[in-house]
Image 1 (spheres, rainbow, N blue to C red):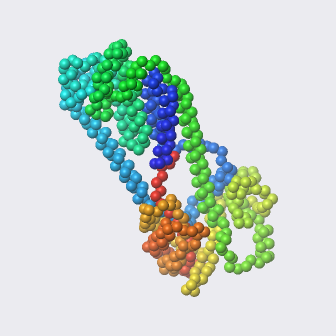
Image 2 (spheres, helix red, strand yellow):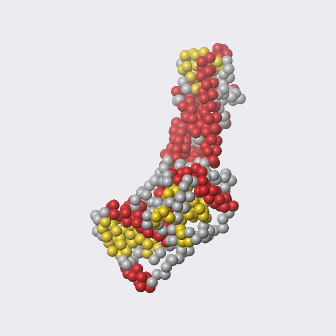
Image 3 (cartoon, rainbow, N blue to C red):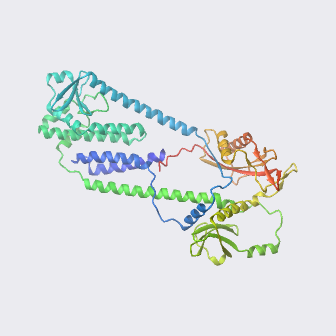
Length: 529
């Protein structure tokens, strides 16, 4: 909501400044009415739209996107996102309560007007339908009816200039503008500019009605005197168009003003603002999409393939084996007749490659810098689409082998990190993630937007959990992190038992590392953008 409020306020401010410089206190009343309503709608709706342009992006992003498209959909062991919904619920509840109050107020005002019409007397005149009622003090208009005081109407004391003024409101349908703004207020009550815009919209209505009446009567001094007589009276309802409307000084100045508004300048500047806004928001949305692709690739490809610094091989590698590994070519798989892409791990770094239809190979590092092909010993291998997907799965599985070594724990029972079949939740990982998030209780006073941590534990042969630990992080954890750490351990202990791991057909104890991303109070608007 905050992002939406900032964007809409910016648009309101710019549109108003254009209005003030080119139209305020100038004779372009019909165009002003159109401009105010259109700018009102644009300022409120544009921040809600998702705008995106096709822009030239870094070649490495295109390559990574191809990698993702050619990978299978199922990638094991993703992070679990736990979102606390209390703050979101409170904000939503507050919004609905205030919107309901505005809706009730709107309905009550409508009811008051229709009650006046129902209990009053309807008279057909050359000015249109006139409703007379003893409770009405100041003449006003709503939709197609003019409302006047019953006693004053009976005595014939209402001047024609006033009736012409109200007739203008009826003929030009000013009530529809007021109703439209009031309906917008129900949903966008938090936008302060909307109240200001309602005032200047009604102010322009009075300018239009004054102009219409003066064209009929041609007596400026007499008309201004009539308006002064109604100045101190307040309208009976807020939705009406009434002759009492302030500011008298501005209205009197406008009656004598002959300076024309700069319509074409207004259109030009407003169009420039819209083009600029579309440009910035479109580029912002495209950048967000590119960043999303980068983040996804990093989590699915680059991070698993990095060799952890704290993991040492259990067996030394002979010098001859090392030499053989250096001479082993890198296999770059591609789909025959199609532009294909992929990635490979070389000397601890991730590289991406593209093989086009002519078997031309391009290799990039993770930052999009083109690499010298002579630095790599590779061979091309044509595969089917199914085979390429299978190879992608195998590559991901191989990348985690260093984390899946066999280790011995304090109780001297053998625990496997590398197994033929990993332990998994009986209900499936997706349902486990959902249940974990529902059981996790994050306090309201956590002052961090996002916290990442890992739970490392042993899945016993009966599927239960033991030795639940949180590996030491490189940073110094604060109080919020420690609390959420304890809560994550508590939540895991409440989860149902898993299917244990199997190795060579035998059920074994195995280690499992569960990454968790805890998003606290994720109130976003986006939207709205």
